[in-house]
Image (cartoon, rainbow, N blue to C red; front, side, top):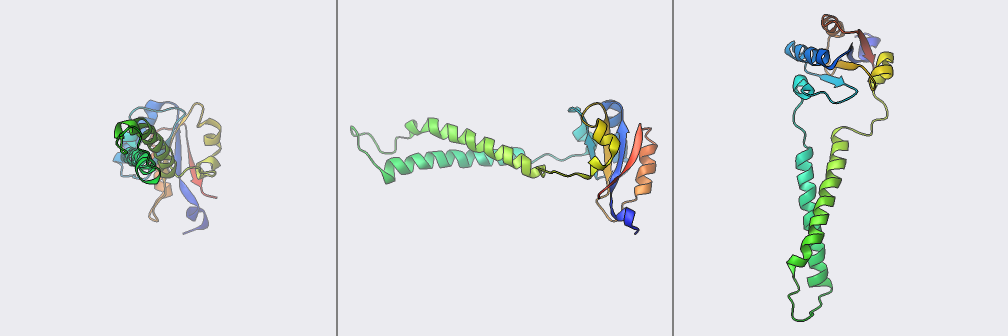
Length: 182
């Protein structure tokens, strides 16, 4: 393996429209390339399915955060009212759970939102100050404004960069470039 292929992150193709990108993603997956990623200036409907992306864990992480937040809010109120500082006012029960509902609801929302944000950041491996795709000049100039990019990532040692490049060129993109991980 030569030095350049050891630094190869993948091969990237540039497309002018989202329809071209969707068609290219479907053909690329059908050809057996599994390690795909797409970069677009705005969300493209159907792109996740075309890339074969699996469902995310964010909903389950959010549910867990909501349950933990609600239990923590209720538990804190129970502890303060029943165990740490019980006050018998007018013969009311110490564990007056209906009074605990508003705070329990708010801590449920707080826990769910916090877990959703940090879970999403962790699953997306963010913050990520450096990514190899920014080594491609056309990507850096057009990715967030007017172009659509499909990248076949190397991922495995058996990745054939020349074969991936030839395949992408057959899809008639605006340009094809090797992405080097420097």
